[in-house]
Length: 194
Image (cartoon, rainbow, N blue to C red):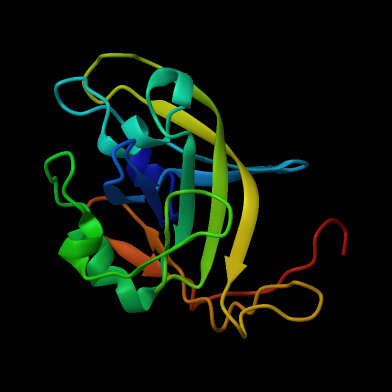
């Protein structure tokens, strides 16, 4: 009911790196902006069916908890939708989804995890807090809050006022089950009494 009613949910890759240097890439439809001062994002990795932390959380959690304390949120577009679906494949810890999906890691400007070259927008983040809603339990929720420390936007996707060109950013969203949508259908409407 939760994932079927909260739609559409934007999808992003979260790229991380393990303390040993292994790359990880996972798609998340539970991610969102939090605020602009400081610019903050969140994503929500659930625990495994056994109640353990998934690789992304293991890597992104603060250094004091054994992680690297950094991650990159990469906006997924329609042209890499099939590669996004591939990255949902469970792999053993230490195996890289970049290799599986044939996506290109590019060094980030400020953080250790790479960004995804094929994604037109990437937010480099420092982990500020992890909130665990049901630690150690199957499918228990986790909220990872990250402060954005650098943004990469591909040429041609923003204007001189730093407004996104939505005709070029063909982002996809998650519906319930195996259904997805795109941002191609849009409409304008004034706010308030307009």
